Image (tube, rainbow, N blue to C red; front, side):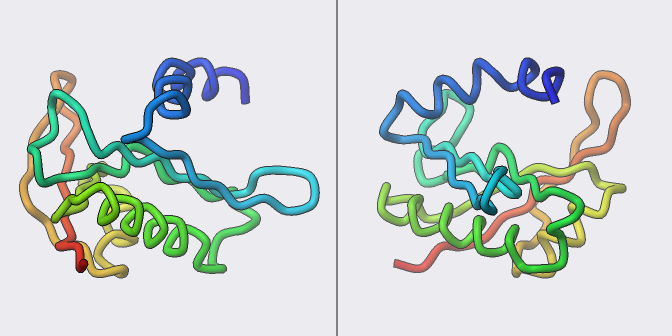
Length: 128
């Protein structure tokens, strides 16, 4: 919806203009039903890391391994960019943490946001 688009508009526009960032998506005949955004360079990333900044699958399309497919494509892009580790951050109490664990990611660290939300940093070692 428009609020979601507005929230991420700057990040999306930057991602499509840079060679070290990429958006991957899956569409049915009419709509985008799943998408991921990966960054391989950022002032907050360590040199050997890439980060999946966004992964989303439409509720009607869940359970079809679309998220997993997008993550794997994001990982291939990161390997091409000479990265060794993929990271992703999720709410520690959400289903997202279970998603990351199910596809082989492990917990690297935890933190709390300024408003007390507990976050978990998940990581995966990339193969060449």
